[in-house]
Length: 172
Image (tube, rainbow, N blue to C red; front, side):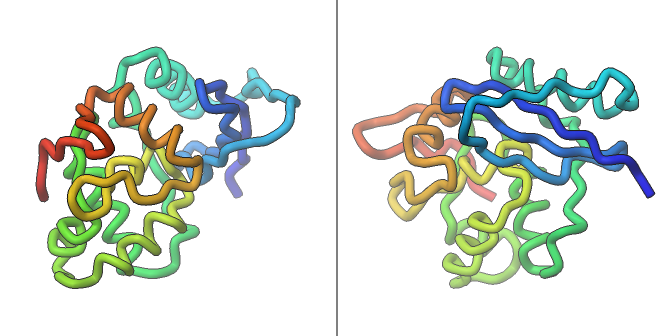
């Protein structure tokens, strides 16, 4: 059995509680409260690399999380796993896609609501960048960390905003 390591990452929108094994990051959650947790110094090198990648991402190196391994073993629905994997591999920093376009990209046109459910149940937001998925017409839609965080993450990555709409600079 692999040892699980948990640490806190500060962001402009609050602290994230991140959990990983050497197999990959398996949980990212916005944390309330003031207690902070440093990464155990005995964590394997890979886990330390994951933590450094998060720090680099929030320092503006928006591609830092691209190489971080992700453990989606907690996602027991094949459709949701395919949606999350497709999103991560096809939509890079500063790019966005609509729920409907992502549904088409995974071979299920018309399944925008099911894609939305996959986004809402994403165990590793930011690493699997559900903040890059927008409602029809480029509207923000929802986000578990709140719309201020979603807008901020998109801006950190260089996505452009025009009023309440984001410019979709990539499609699947």
